[in-house]
Length: 408
Image 1 (cartoon, rainbow, N blue to C red):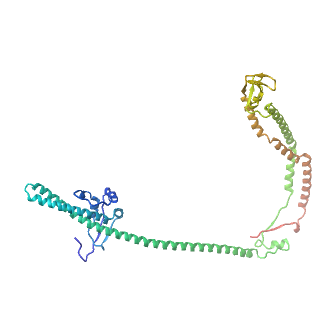
Image 2 (cartoon, rainbow, N blue to C red):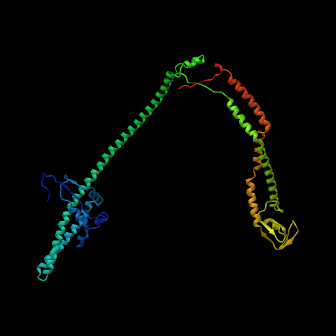
Image 3 (tube, rainbow, N blue to C red):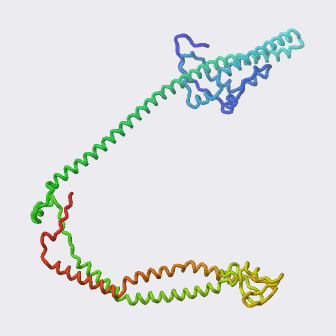
C-alpha cells in the first residue's frame, strides 16, 4: 500500500543477503526469460529476500543503511537489471497461469478429471501466489535501484566536494610551509648579522684603545680588561742538558750497537753464501735453470728437468747422462723431495730478497752516529749550554722580553 499524502516515512532499511548467495547475485549473467514451472525455481532466492526486506517509501524518504549492509548492497548487481529479469519471468509465469486456468476449466467440465482439476487448481493458486510475490519484489527492486542511484550521486558529489576542500587545504598548508621556511631563513640571517655586529661592539668595549704602551710598566697598568700579557720562557739550558744526556747514553752503547751490526753483516754474508750454494744445487745442468718437475735418471741417480730429460735420448729407449756418461734404458723416476725443496727455497728467497737493502740503510744511519761525530756534537752542545746559562744568570731588560697580545 502506498503511504498517505502529507506524511514522510523515515525508516532504516537493512538488506540481509545470505552470504552463500552474494557471489551468485554478483556473477549471475543476464539470460532470456524462463518459461514453464522451472522459471520460478530458477530465480535467485537472495534477490527475493533482499527485495522483501525493503518496504515501500516515496523518493523523498530518508533511507539509511549500515556500513556492512551498504558495502554488500553496492557490490550486488544493479536492482533495475534484476527487476527487468523478473518482469520477463513474470510474463512467463502469467502464460503458464493462463495455461493452467484453461486446463482447470477443461478438467472441471468432465467428471473423470476431477482429480486433475484439483491438481490444476492447486498449481494455479501457487502460480498466482508466485505472481503476486514477483510483482511485489519487482516494485521493491525498482525502488532499491532508485535508492542506489541516489547513493551513487551523493557519493560522487561528496567525493568531489571533499576532494576540492582537501586540495585547497593542501595548497594552503604548502603556502604556509613556504612562508615559515622563508621566515626561518630570514631570522637565521638576521641572527648571524647581529652576532657579527655584537662581537665587533664587544671587542671595542672590552679592548678599548689598541695602541701598545710605551714601556712595560705602562702596558701592565692598562689592566687585564684591555690586554692579556704573557712572558715567554726561553730557557734553553734544560733542553740542551737533555740532549747531552741522550748523546752520552748513546755513546756508551755505541760499541754494543756496532757489534750487533757487525754480527748482522756476518749473518747476511753467510746467508748469501748458503743461498748461492743452494741455488747451485737446485739448478739443472742441462738448462742451467731451477728444477721444474725434476726426475731422477736411472741407474746413475742424477736429476734433470722433465723436459730436459727428453734431450738425453741417443737412441730409441736409450738415454745417456751428460754428467757421468752412464747409459740406460730404464727411464726416470719423479724426484718429489727435490721438487718440494725447490718450492720452499723459492718462497724463502722471496722473503729474504731485500735483506741487503735493509742492511744498507742500517749502515747509512750508523755512519751518522760514529764516536767522533757524537763527540763533536757533544762539544758544541756544551758550548751552547755554557752560553745559555751565562745569559740566564744576567739581569733581564725590557728589550729582551717578548710580549704576546691576545684579544678576547
